[in-house]
Length: 135
Image 1 (cartoon, rainbow, N blue to C red):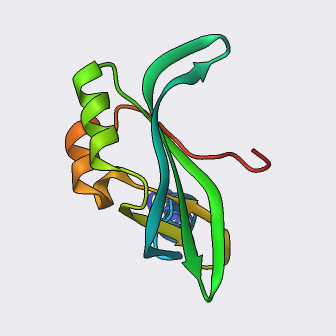
Image 2: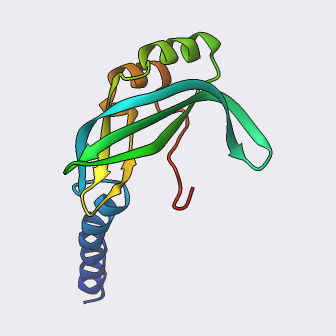
Image 3: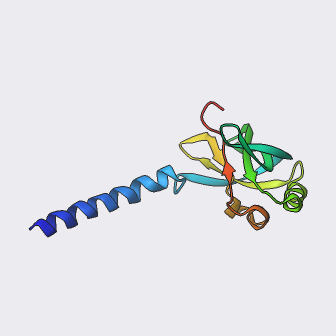
């Protein structure tokens, strides 16, 4: 009997995770659109308080239902100067970049290196940061 209770409890937790995890990590409510690179520059990126690393800051805009969303950015940490230069060259101003936005709140967006092969090739997922609310 105790085993059945534990099995039911675990099943309930797994079912809850299947519903909640996609919401948290940008699963099924995030829609992919083409965005436009507004700028791509080398930057000193904050990792922790008073700790920085080299990388690239890409600013971008995108449009949803005739509304333009701009002043968005992704910061990608890279410790290799050649890869930084290559990433900047790969994303010049007005280049197309794949963006995902939250269908429930189109102001929220992210750029996933996995959606942008050149970014994934040069930067991988070593470090990336999206704007926090109010940033």
